[in-house]
Amino acid sequence: MKLDLTIDRVDVYAVALPTLRSFGVSGGNVAVAGLPSIRILTKVSADGVCGWGEATPIPAWTYETTESISSTIGNYLAPAILGQPVWQLDGISRIFGRTINRGFSIGAPLAKCAVDVALHDLVGRALNVPLGALWGQRRCEEVELAWIVSGQTPAEVAECVAEGVENGYRSFKVKIGLHDERTDLNVVRSVREAAPDAPLWVDANQAYTVDEALRIATRLQEFDVFAFEQPLPANDVVGQRRLRAASPLPVALDESLRHPSDLATFVKLDAVDVAVAKVQRSGGLTLSRRLCQLAEDCGVRLLGSGLTDSDVGLAASLHLFAAHGIAGPADLNGRQFVSSPYASGITVENGRAQVPAGPGLGVEVDEAAVQELSVEL
Image 1 (tube, one colour):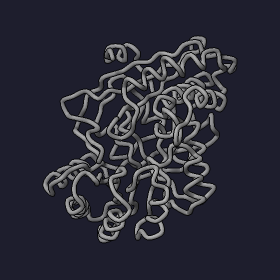
Image 2 (cartoon, one colour):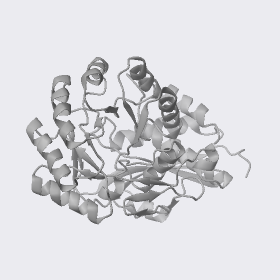
Image 3 (cartoon, one colour):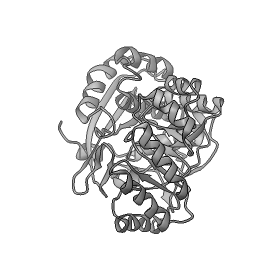
Image 4 (cartoon, helix red, strand yellow):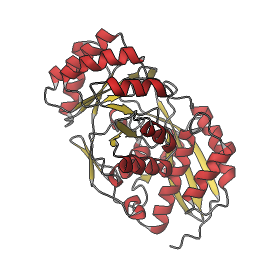
């Protein structure tokens, strides 16, 4: 099919998905068992061809909410791109930047991501090729996933690790910063005791000061942790430089890297060991690919992560990681905490996710199921 299609419609759905387990980070709850998990699904259409994208509102992690994502897409981003050629992904990214401008970094990345990913899906479907073929870049066919541990007592942690092992997972990511320093360290110790040989890294989600992070990093060495993710507030550039210079562990940046230019700043300051690739945080696949390529060109190691995505978001991450050879372990934890009854096409077995081979994202979305799951805001 020729790519002479122009965008003629953008639909936005807030869907209530079943929550499988509770999940918390240092900022608060991400998922609560017994309560639905809300996701924003976006459908972009052009002359009968459509693509789907996802945004995951987590106010405990970032400032965008269910309501703000929906209104940003419906009232600002969608009107700005109607009539644009579907293939003009870079140009549409620039339109997004003019429509919702940047603050300290990229503005409204989750909302922009939902539309950007839907456009990639649409273009792939229009050409009948998966995203890897669209980009000419696919270095692996599967991604190893990590099981997330977010507990407090040794018994809770041991039970969580055992559940991960039972489900075939062999790598673990531990959320810290939820408690005092001693409890945080005891949680990591409990994980290491329960999984003595497993690859293990920790994520503080901006919970610490520089001094606290240095104390924690020194103690974490004994647990053979391979990365210390986002210990400091995202905009503490000076603190990050101090920490990276003194930390005995590699420091990974997540929330600090909204835009590729953020990574460029940390590279210039010699203040980053590992860059976390995360599709939603960086406003979609267009900017995420730029960030990943910059990291590769600068010799910065890449680590993969997600945002408790349902299957549309999971597929986008798998394609990005496969393109840059991020074979894992990756924190793509959506399947651990939410189910996606609206979608099919992704296979996860024994903690390993297959990169979809179908056109676009390779996920088939049941629009009737989406409408049935939709809720009013």
